[in-house]
Amino acid sequence: MTLIKSISGIRGTIGGKPGENLTPLDIVKFTTAYGQWVRSPKNTNEKIVVGRDARISGKMVQELVMNTLVGMGFEVIDLGLSTTPTVEMAVQMEAASGGIIVTASHNPKQWNALKLLNEEGEFLDAEEGEEIIQLSERTDIAYAEVDELGSIQPKKDYIDCHIERILELKWVDAHRIKAAGYKVVVDAVNSTGGIAIPSLLRKLGVEVVELYCEPNGDFPHDPEPLEKNLSAIFKKVVQEDADLGIVVDPDVDRLAFIDENGKMFGEEYTLVAVADYILGKQKGNTVSNLSSSRALRDVTEKHGGHYYASAVGEVNVVKRMKETQAVIGGEGNGGIIFPELHYGRDSLVGTALF
Image (cartoon, rainbow, N blue to C red; front, side):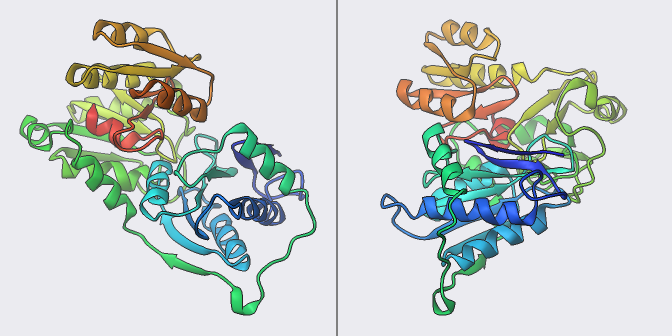
């Protein structure tokens, strides 16, 4: 059993002893530290967005997070079941001072975590993360008195808002996609991708075959979208005579494709394929991290752009993208970052562009 504190948040296995596992005490302690950090002078309000993936412990963890923030006097925007990129966008759309995503990403069901966002809806950098770790060790905490308690405001329509923003993008041609008559199988590992991806595809006029799209947190296979874990969708694509298979991880920031023959297209080529399309429409620069293949460099140079590498980690990719004014970027693990929408890995926009 494990508890890991890092610059990106806190993650661990549910149950066990405080300080050794992800327990209610650890969740409250770390949420409190984040709330203290949010109250720095740079932030203009005390509104925080909170959403979660569908893993079994998610509701319990989210309730602890939200009510801790209420106890500190914050206004909490409760997205409920959501996706990592949706929460990121909601922070911007709500003009909030930050956000917390309750998800352990591609880790198995016994894990959960708090992913922490700044006022831009982006992950914290190393310095900010370290500050929160230090704050979590403080004991001189004062919570709000009864007349100063915060509140929780449910807003369950942000996935729909996210999809509508994608449909408005100039390089997403819903009419052309509908005219093609595609049939697609979706494996969402019984998490929130089962809400978001089929809804997006149907609005694009695609026929959807759902595989593991019930958001109940009962992962039917290892949730990391690697070839060794995806035998069911390989078979289903062939059985259904589908044009494509789509696989996302539990919080919907990693995206993998299966071809019409039931073969893995490869996570490394998710970003490469989408970048090839975008660069064919608008010239520009690209960024991926040092753990990605050189294929993105080759595609970028083919289109007359410049490729730049960043250190591993989404926050480092985003920083480099801003420095180089990249039109698209991401990671070789199937993460697409399209800044015209927002600076975060997003399987929904990746799907629409692909």
